[in-house]
Length: 401
Image (cartoon, rainbow, N blue to C red; front, side, top):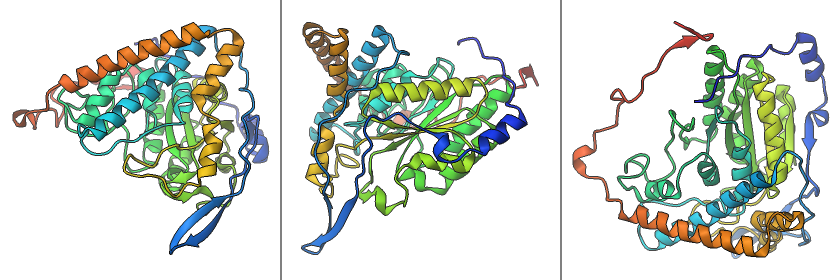
């Protein structure tokens, strides 16, 4: 475990007052290179609600440069993004072959946000992913077979076959809190993680993600407000993928940028293009540094698109085809490949070799997942309660109690 950071002095009251007096616009940093509006027209056709989009299908701008990433770091992010996508393609195949227990949730089009945000965390920071953040699991050290076995409810899965979706974590090695299906509930939990670390003399960042639908819940506001009032290191990434299942954003809220809500809590926020991994990383890097310095929480709104339905059973027929085409041109992997190529960091031969390596690795991971047996009934009660598997040492302000 890395050496703990010492607690930092809290900002002076006068400085806080000046910051809290800023306008909402002044507290939001917009890193985007294109600002988009996605107003939909709601009509009825054959007795069904239909949404129509009248925007223009355009090509994306170049990615925003950041000096914070080295060549090796950028290539690592690219590799994780590729792994994320190819792993989910394998999961889709496993589902269609009847090997998945339950459903499958995809992050197609959101790989850059999931990977780059988690990549900004330090080794002693915490994270709590949601269903579309499977790329963050890879960054944190989980193997693709762990994710596959979890969906297949195999005995070798992180929950040993007791769950068929993404409800697993690792408190001891990876500092990862399990997802919670009740959307928004992870936010106060992660605020509590920061508070617990502070009581032990450490200031850390605790990152979690939420969708545009989940940020409409009451517990979202309660958790963010508590983190703001206590100046806890919560890093909250709102993945605004425009649809809360089948409800478009404009039917949920009257504001265009969800990040402006941060002003109501007196905390800063970023708006980023969620298909640009460089923007995502830069915003998250600054938010993590602020958390380490005891500066409190940050909200990061990533604008992107969920390129498949809510889950594998959802064909997403409610999404206008031209809107999907707009976002297909903003494929985060294709955009990042272009950036790396222009930088001279990724040649054609290296790209082909890397993709082939990942394909071979993923086939081996799938084979390992398929060979894991299903759990047996005789161990169904094992692991329900902690059986001396954890050895907590209570501390307060860094001193043993």
